[in-house]
Image 1 (cartoon, one colour):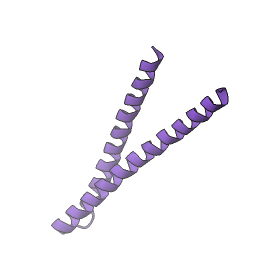
Image 2 (spheres, rainbow, N blue to C red):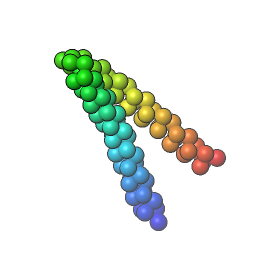
Image 3 (tube, one colour):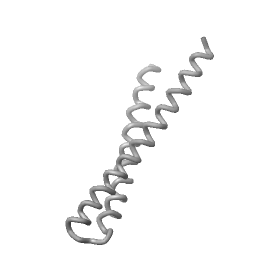
Length: 80
């Protein structure tokens, strides 16, 4: 029984890491493509693409922070 529980915890940890990575990647991609769209519309070189990447990184890490806080809050509720 303990072996099954350890296996389950490993799978949950891997799922969480995958989700965190995808959240950051998706935010960066959306920021880049919106910046690229603005660059094309306003006939700029790559100014808005860079701004979009920076905003995507910031929003990605903020989303990860919120997700981790939510998950750690759920685990604390289970313990009490």
